[in-house]
Length: 74
Figure 1: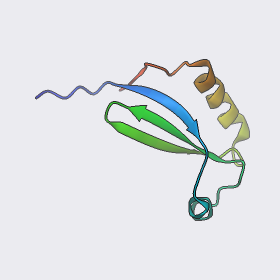
Figure 2: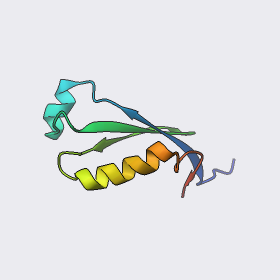
Figure 3: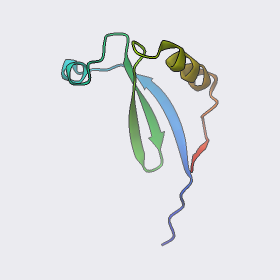
Figure 4: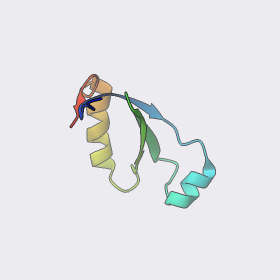
């Protein structure tokens, strides 16, 4: 069976639910987790808005516009 290296992704914004995760990562209440849903499973990304607010805002603009919907990971 040949495995393709291109995978479709969907990105969903989800709030951090576990206080333990917040403590373990030194994240603040402004930080949140972003879930990329691929055809091989989910990838969770911690968005450190308290550390890099402009970078997070820029990335979230792309997400909210749908720029990553149906794209491929190479």
